Length: 553
Image 1 (cartoon, rainbow, N blue to C red):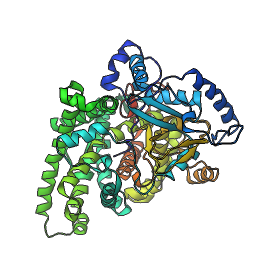
Image 2: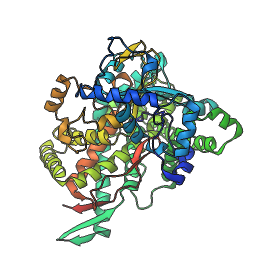
Image 3: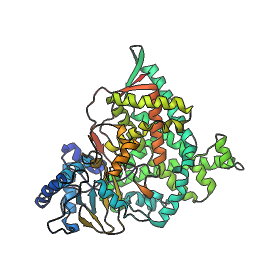
Image 4: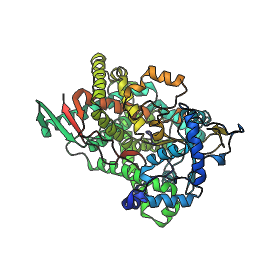
């Protein structure tokens, strides 16, 4: 799934009565109270250690030089259920990312959490992240979203790779990689994404002409673009996965597609509380929270099932033509068609994985695009630098979208910078297959370790001037310098290694192509340069979508 790394911890400050009422409906996962006296003592020593190890964030050894025990890792409270109740009362689940940042500031670069039945060790420094990834093994394991797994089991659906582990996961993943990750696959689906991005900009240009006001000889329109960005993400995903357009840019998009977007949002909103509540008990008693969650997934599967059946019928009509011939003739049948034709995955497994890709490919693309437009709008000098590079590259590419993207590295830098500041999934998780030492603490094999992306991305120990929006910081020369200084593992929004986001190539190119066409067509501005307030359900998003002014160039 596209960057849908999940967090099982909790938050920090009271959001008031209204916030606490919403926690179990829209909040997020578990773990974290502000710490006890013993932890505060550790925090003082931790902060002193950090001053003495600026860039690397490495904790000093104790006076006896020994590796400290797991139990000595600073923690946020020992009683999981007491912590859970405390966090629920404070209504701060939706500010989990801020809580993590505050907790690292208080306790240093590693701490333990226990909320409800969930336990984890939380880290943020690149040196520790590297050590964790080196111990992930051939079959990397991350946190299983049990509510999703329970839905598949109760509905007797096959599980996709997002819910699998071990050899079964690896076998399916290698087959999927050929259709969504390899360069040959990207070359096949890139024109489809480019087509949708162009159509989006044409739709936006027509709207600006129709509804915009004229200033200094140019038309401009101020809107909340988020509904249109969600439609773009769904249209693009369907085009790549199913090989067909669904007409979301028409004046009256289908009710079916609108219901799908609603179902994805409801699924994301109801997942976090089910991560730490006894969801099987809620299932047995028919609790509304579980009923809403299951109904949302049922609609998502129904939507996918209908499109898969149409894809199968379409593929049958192409019998006798090779896949290369169809692609050359403009008849690329999408990821679905490629998987069906090769027949290496059962139809049930194809359905499971296509459904997961669809469910994970809308919000996780549309939301970073909202943040991208906002940051480019409030940083006009950066916007102009990116635009000039895009114009030059586009002129030299001769209409080839792949060449255009390759010649405009600032576009990729923009997406990486947005995901540094606003990671969609705020953690990446791994369970080491062997005992490891992090920050001079012993961490046993099988411990759930969370890499906390929001504090990582905003740490002055990892990034120079971390609050500044600077796509140029990801240039190849600067990146090589950072790696030479031992600061790799700084950009992890799509995960890492064999278990990185399977939809990564689709998402990266989809976002870059849309930004490219927008920058070629419009100047972007915002009325306020104040920071966006963010909230966390299962993904990080704006509390209120920013309003963007599009001015025709």
